[in-house]
Amino acid sequence: LAMIIGAYVTSLSLSRTDLLHEIRERLEGVYQLLVPVFFCVMGMLVNLRAMRGVLGFAVIFTLAAMAGKLLGCALPAVLRGFNLRGAWRIGAGMLPRGEVTLLVAGIGLASGVIGNDLFGVAFFTLLASAIIAPCLFARSLEGGSGLRPSHQAAADIVPERRLELTLPGAAVADFLRFRLEQAFRQEAFMVHRISREAPVYQIRKENIVITMQQEQQQLVLSTSAAHEAVMRLIVLEEIVALKDMLAGLQELQTSANFGNNILAGLFGAPGA
Image 1 (cartoon, rainbow, N blue to C red):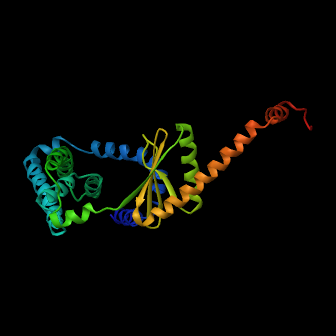
Image 2: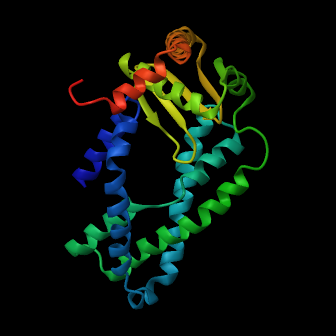
Image 3: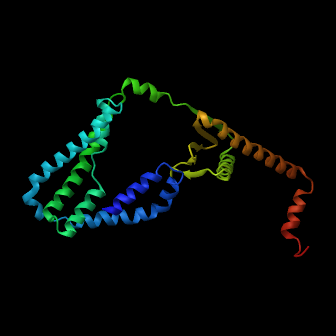
């Protein structure tokens, strides 16, 4: 299991860095290819006939595993400022078992440590927890906040500054958004699109995090109060540059020789 632990520690170390979305985008194709193959192969290793004699044990083992997850995750949450409702939500959200369970069981089966019956028990636990956990988690979301009043007051104080730009049309908004992406990258920011359905971007550099979202002809940027000045400065520079560009285009449009120069460039003789 050394490779699993190494991969987990590496990804955990990189999860709060600017490289997070870059790595995720580069590995998305590998993920989409290998994950279905992994689960199909593991599912084909299950021998249902070998599970007949251990079905009762599988049920008891699954209940014990779920109870361990609930208590093991809910109790620390209570110590960190969550009330019972919030602790229950965390425990219910951590119930599902996934690929690590199958991988450990697969290694045990391949090495002869366990047989097909116990491998089936592990698969039963994964399947049952994957079905039960969403139901419990959905029920846990009913009610109020999961934080204690003292911690809720601190969580509600989240200073955020928004900058809303309404532009003449969607095409202009697209152009300005593209210019802002390039401007932030020139300032050593990492710019990543975090939604496939909508143009929503996360812009990061060290401890500065800016969110940019486009809705038709409107651009909305938001960040913390401490980094508002940086965001507004970069946006202002691009708006001034865009204004100068539009003024230059307007001058060309009003020029009497503008059309003639364009036609001459398109249809002029070679070498002229």
